[in-house]
Image 1 (tube, rainbow, N blue to C red):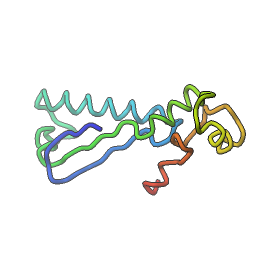
Image 2 (tube, rainbow, N blue to C red; image 1 turned 60 degrees about the vertical axis):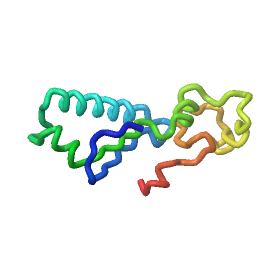
Image 3 (cartoon, rainbow, N blue to C red; image 1 turned 90 degrees about the vertical axis):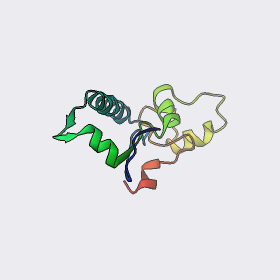
Length: 115
């Protein structure tokens, strides 16, 4: 988790809710880099001072909420994983996890956020 700013208004940006989501974590990290760069240069974002934004707002950025699910998507489930049988069952009997959306226990996190 990355926290920027000190304001009373809190905004949360959460990426990587699904194991198959490799894009939003990168975008959020670019966003953090860009806002920090603009802040350091005393610049503005869409016409608003970055210093003022971070004085009025606290930005909470969680680039990847589901790193274990992402690992399954990229590397599959190892044979020594104690949840292997359960996960393969949740994956409709397939050992191909390239489209995996759940976390380490097979739960889709996005439903917990009403998405």
